[in-house]
Image (cartoon, rainbow, N blue to C red; front, side, top):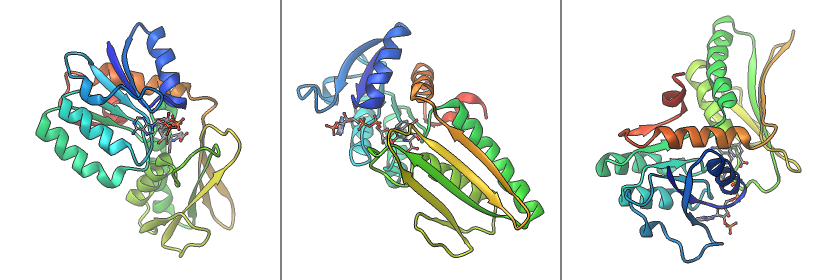
Amino acid sequence: MKLLLIGYGKMGRAIEAQAIARGHQVVGIVDPTHPNVHITGFTAATADVAIEFTHPDAAFQNVQACLRQGIPVVCGSTGWLHHFPEAQALSQQTGTPLFYASNYSIGVNLFFHFNEYIAAKMHQFGGYDVQVREIHHTQKVDQPSGTALTAAEGILRHFPNKTTWRNEPTQTSEELAIISEREGAVVGTHIVTYTSPADSIELKHEAHSRDGFVQGALLAAEWLPGHQGVFGMKDLLGL
Ligand SMILES: NC(=O)C1=CN([C@@H]2O[C@H](COP(=O)(O)OP(=O)(O)OC[C@H]3O[C@@H](n4cnc5c(N)ncnc54)[C@H](OP(=O)(O)O)[C@@H]3O)[C@@H](O)[C@H]2O)C=CC1
Ligand SMILES: O=C(O)C1=N[C@H](C(=O)O)C[C@H](O)C1
């Protein structure tokens, strides 16, 4: 496939290496390190799919540009989802597909699945409080992580004792605490903990490297062209 890479940082570079190893061709790199390359220089004829991993402030504009150029786009940037309804509408209007996941690793998507199951069971039996904790490297600019937000939304859907989330040291009992920690080069750790006076139960995912994110993003990029609409990992993995 002809891949357009948007963002050439930790993720973009790792995706390039695995994409080439899988026989794909990188037809362009859009990033401040390549100042003469622009999304508007590409079309569906020159790029089969774009993969976007940039920055919370840049992602929506890049997604819009791809959709307007008719280039299917797989986006992994976090921290821009307040614009997601506009991106969905533009995908529909242009007939160009969009794929989004706050976390592309298959392990995390299983974690999301079990997280919702556990939340429903814990609500059914009662007696537990719940919190979400995420730990990432010190270069991460957004807080809480996109993955922690997806996990929190999954809990809120099935555990009605909590009505909203809060990313601050103190919460009311109706607020789901999301604790964010930034530490060294931690790739990404997410922990959901249920606590009662008698015991604790933890669901934990710890990324050992970025390989899982890269593998999932490439699977999405190989799958997306030819589909029409807005998709996520549940569609890809059948979860
Ligand atoms: N969904 C998932 O599975 C995952 C999501 N992420 C998310 O992906 C994003 C990127 O992560 P990561 O690669 O670690 O970050 P990096 O900071 O390592 O890389 C981001 C790159 O994008 C560049 N960039 C900034 N603005 C633009 C723009 N407008 N157009 C093109 N390129 C731009 C940056 O350039 P410069 O440094 O000069 O600003 C940098 O080279 C983050 O939002 C992160 O949370 C990360 C891992 C997995
Ligand atoms: O910025 C990162 O590094 C990561 N970001 C994503 C997130 O915000 O959840 C996914 C992963 O945890 C790594």
